[in-house]
Image (tube, rainbow, N blue to C red):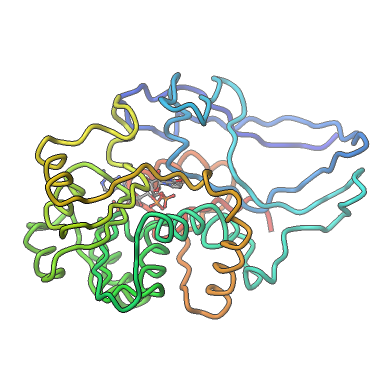
Length: 327
Ligand code: NDP
């Protein structure tokens, strides 16, 4: 028998409620290890907490591609581990994902060389219409988070002249400019962001990588140029509200999109599975060569999963929020 710890969904925040760490509970148990042919036992190294999990906390996720978590059942999420024992021909003890792809940082498989990295890359490439040499200005909201911090760097690598980030603190703004090479960054919690955006984007906005929705996006869309493109990645500012996805836009913003012929198509990374392998190799090459800088916020211990999730939902993270489970 092995001792195990698992996180269960203890209670739901309610459709219009903010999640709290108390919605989760850590349970101790034992596991009889008796591998059947084809099974492997994996020791978890890192777990991911992601915004989509907020929908899974509701009784109804509001989408057809993810199901709600069941109360008192173990919650699911992405992770990275090492094979402890194996009854599968293709796996042996000690196997893990290829560390060379991530410069030895296995947690990057949950971020820059994983789902968030692919989201940023596919989003920019499939919906951004970025053209090198076209002097485009890109704005990224949620810019200091996992997807945003990568999307801005990819926009720059793909040829945008100006890349402006919007995020929730002065410190994050400094990091975006000094460490990640953003042209400038704005703190949406301070001052008049419309005026600050106009100053940062004197030629208007051509491409908008939208992670947050709500009033921030209304402000950006109001300053977009004719024939611009919104990459509709996520709308985190609306995730604690009982609204469908994507949430309805104000009439003014809808009119601005129509008048300026701006595209704003729904985007889902899972719709591009055939491009994921090549995408991961591209991300790995950028990370290993230092062309993309990776930011992470790591907390230790499965007991901290609920706290880490709630902290990420309220901006406590810089870059990808990860929970380290074991060394
Ligand atoms: P992040 O690492 O960006 O973490 C979430 C961030 O959102 C926080 O750090 C916080 O930063 C910001 N935030 C929270 N509440 C608000 C608010 N009310 N207004 C503005 N900003 C807010 O998460 P991810 O990178 O994992 O996800 C980013 C977005 O991408 C999410 O909307 C997610 O749903 C979406 N996504 C979409 C995918 C797709 O296939 N379309 C796949 C993966 C993710 P701050 O300090 O700046 O407020």
